[in-house]
Length: 104
Image (cartoon, rainbow, N blue to C red):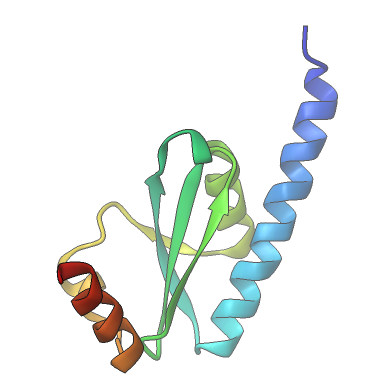
């Protein structure tokens, strides 16, 4: 039987660390919003989009930890990464060359 108290404390520490990282991203980009995406056994991706169009992501070990981190950071979450939210992302030459490389 797992020590649920230890597990809870570990989840709280992980969520707090992710919340600090989310906060730092938001500060650098004039604010941020996000979306949570399951990525299988690897956990949950926290996709971040800054007010300035900058973007990034973090990975949490579980969906619950990702939700907890987003809540601690005051991050507004979107259900889907589409439409107006996705249109805010600004891409540059690096991203376009990576996308073109994948298609070749």
